[in-house]
Structure formats: C-alpha cells, structure tokens
View 1 (cartoon, one colour):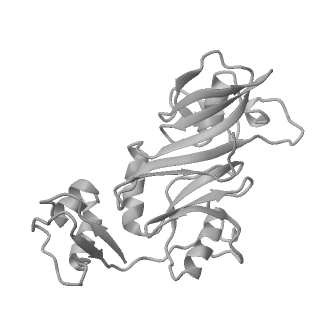
View 2: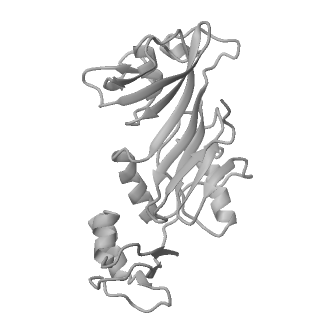
Length: 282
C-alpha cells in the first residue's frame, strides 16, 4: 500500500506506530493481526527489533471504502498529492462534504471521483471549510494518514493560513483573539462568542491597509464553525460583505474568505510541506 523509510537507528516498528505516529490501540492491533508491516521485499519484520536508518518498511492492509458518491466529473484543482494525502482547492459556494444522500456535487464527491479514477476507494477530509470559504482542503488517502492528521489538527501542528478583507482598520498590526464560540439560540446557523462555548483561538496579522478596510492573514489554532467570521466581528471588524455577522452588504452580496496556505511536517515523508493555493495572489 505504501512504503516508509526509517530515519533513525534503533527505532522499532512498535515505537514507530505507538510513539512516533501515536496511532490508537485499535489501529495498531489491526496492523499486527494483519501482518501489515514487512520489509521492502515482503519478508516479515519483528515489531520489537531495532532497525537501521534507511530501512524501508512496506505497509499492506485492507482499506475501507468511503461512502461518498463520485461526482460525474472532477472539476477541482489539486495543489498537492502523494500516497498519503492530497490537498485540493475547494471553490467558493461548494460544501466540503455531503449532508444529505442526494448531495453529489460537494468537494468530497469530486475528490472521490479522482480517487476512484486512479484505482482507489478511500478519501476523508481532515478539516472542513464553510461553503462560502474557498481554498485549501487537506484529504487523507488511507486510515493511518487520517488518524495521524486528525491528531495533528488537534495538536495545532498543521498551520492553516487564511486571508480576508475586513471592515475598518485594525489599530494593531497583529494580535490574538481568544474567545469561546457557541451556537446562537436565536439563529439556526449563526455562531456567537459565548462564555459557555467551545475554546477558540485565532491569530491575525494586517498585511495591507486600504481607506476603509484592511487585508488580514489569519492562522487558526482551533477550528470552530465560522470561527474567523465570528472572531473578526467580535473585535468590530467583520469580513467585508459578511452580513450574517453585521457587515455591510456588498455589490456581490457575499463575503470573501480564502484558505491560502497549509504547512505541516509530513509524518510519512519526514519533511516540511508548504502548499499555497495557486488561486492566491497578494
């Protein structure tokens, strides 16, 4: 299914799975029972044997099928792809994933069409983007990658950078918004800053100033629904056109929020991956 090169002398398979990748007990047990880890030539490897740096391990295991129905065509730009993940540029106005069985034109429907065309059947998004947000979405191509990337999101080791034009000129050049977010009891989809809400942290930096607005880059430390939109409105600078959060209506009748960059240390390739959306220009 995929190969992995040991990068340090003395590492065991057990340590790789439990300590380095920090996989859950269930996945580790399933890999052991399936004899999923072998040397490159297919010969068995003892899980507690010390391995030399440069040793190539082969991982072979059954991969479940994702439930997304493939779209009729694949119309999304791929910005990065390897054996473990792909990063696509989700268009504005498209949902990340289906919410109803009849939904067949979401980002994940397009992704699974690409995966199946290339002989696979598994793809699961690691995070999500609001329908009105465009830009980079990370997708895992097998369950081990999904488990590791999910943990990396939780531990804030995948850096997600967004860009938005907001109303007014923020006084400081940069800052951090630490304000819990919860559901608005009076609106089905709106979120609000609430003391009883979920922990939410957004870092921002002003990168360009205009007469009545400014362009900001934002890094998410958490990933709450509408987080950037709620936080910017909370400090009095809603995203231009985001009328749900009290911004003035624009000619387009919509807001612009763009996921412009993803950066992380690749757990399988052992190098820093930095991907910028090709649709982004400053």
